Image (cartoon, rainbow, N blue to C red; front, side, top):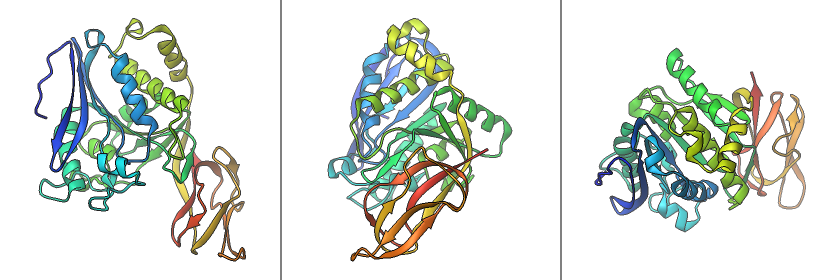
Length: 326
């Protein structure tokens, strides 16, 4: 990054990256401490995190902060203004699938490269904040990557629990290879740094309650890292954050997707938060004349964490994600 931020100060700017720019805020605490990165807008139609990080910028006072917070307010500006689900309209790539990026690649790959070299490499901890896209409802949850490295996994899970989100998914499906790390959080993990994905919000909402929940989770993380004293934030926000962080989350050992084998119109038979049993009908797909093509069944017992809510469905697409408890 081009700008230097002195201890005890805060600076916001538009960071040029190829043909785009990223809105970035650095809050450099007056006191020594870790570097925490918070990111929003990797997928352009996931809005609550964008509002939450604006609020974080207003809440945190650098003279009371121990360490540094790097905020990437909106990582996919083109996708945001195009109201696109996941992909960039410039190159039709998903930013969260091209890490660690390429210095000479497409725009999305160049953004990933910048974020790897200039954001991840300077951070100690990362939280990448997402929401349900315009077609998804979800139960708030955190993905805590599992790298099968005892110390890193323990540190990452403790970090995940500190957020105070009721559901934690233990996730080991990304390559343990820094040169093909795929996603933003996994790029951090392959470099020995705890990187979480926080999922709060749904259906491209701009809910103030969902944004407030994200703010609380971020404050919890800062307290866990000893970046904030209780007196550093106004009482109501910190009291709420403290109560959230004391919750005991449900741990899920994996997510199981229910996928449609046909193309047609999807009708859900369950909703997020529902407990399902193996073999339970969770949805059906009809053709365009209203005739049944397929009934979809839960392959395992668990809790519905993510649900497709819009009618169009193509062969092979996921309709329902079920968290399988430990």
